[in-house]
Length: 234
Image (cartoon, rainbow, N blue to C red; front, side, top):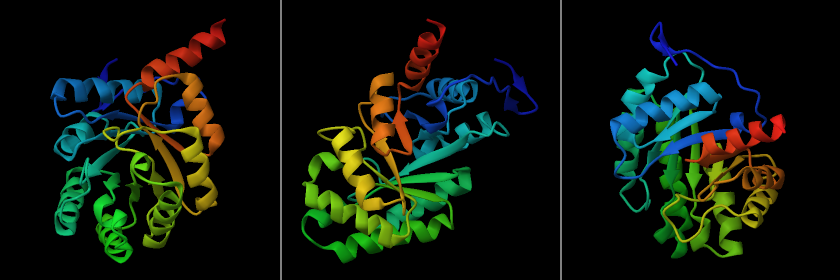
């Protein structure tokens, strides 16, 4: 792939799942070279976004300029237990660096304690700083009961966010069909549902989309799309 006029040359590939994929690299040992590879792949395969830690937003933004791929930054990741003011500051800094979308982690501890008003205000604060940009709220479904998942999704809706997201990928479980179906039933189209965590195969991706997911967060996007393209060639 070549660099052209400050952006990567776009390679159109026929895939039914690529446009749903947020190409993700959030491990603490991620290097700038891996972010460059991530961005190259996102442009080549036509993924929705690259999802990176806030420290890499500026780099990713430069690499995918004019490509059509968006940059998503995580906020308060991966625990969500930091101060609301810290989340606001990170959100603002990420946007200044070029982030188009934000994936924030809900304050799970306060939610489990039943302090829903505090959690609501935490989300609202980031939504306000995002200034109409897409905000997705990670509720970490692996730590919640079914009723808690329903309540958390409603809080995301009430706070004015755009998506509820299943997992950080660092919790006890990742995305499941059952969880995506539950969140989608509560959402009723009022917010999107991003499935993330442990999505490694085309079969998983399609099952989650069929269950109601409208975005897929995965570090295995290239493998999934190549699997789909290979099936088309058979």
